[in-house]
Length: 166
Image 1 (cartoon, rainbow, N blue to C red):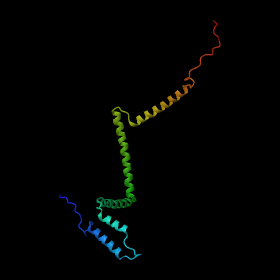
Image 2: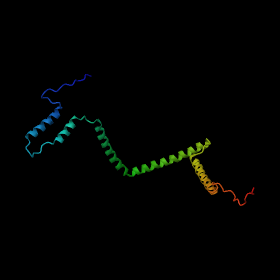
Image 3: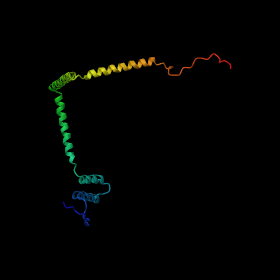
Image 4: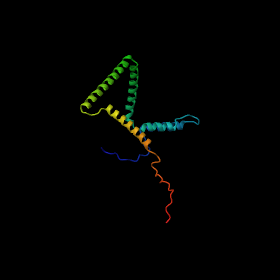
């Protein structure tokens, strides 16, 4: 692909794109013919129009707009569907089926673990709770048997006798 070289604009020609040139011309004409106190086009509007003309279109804007429309339609349809009695029955049936499936799977896993001579989850939880109770009672026993004065050195017996005089 050939690249275009930059050229200095010719005198009397504008660097602006054609639509921006039209806006610029309209702005100049309105300023030329405006009397003091007249309301003419504001420069901020002209700059915004020029920015809108020169910025490339956002390729994701169409996708965002379509996604927003789809969400509105889905929310409308879903809201109407959830109000119906059939929807409530279907959801109740689905939740009951899920609960039954979980109970069945739990039984199958317990039988498989028993066949492999491994503890199940409930057995491990029971052992863990029992171990925690044993550790708590052991801590209570240690606290009761440990005398705080036993850790300090005991003073020797009082010496009431005097050594023989030499």
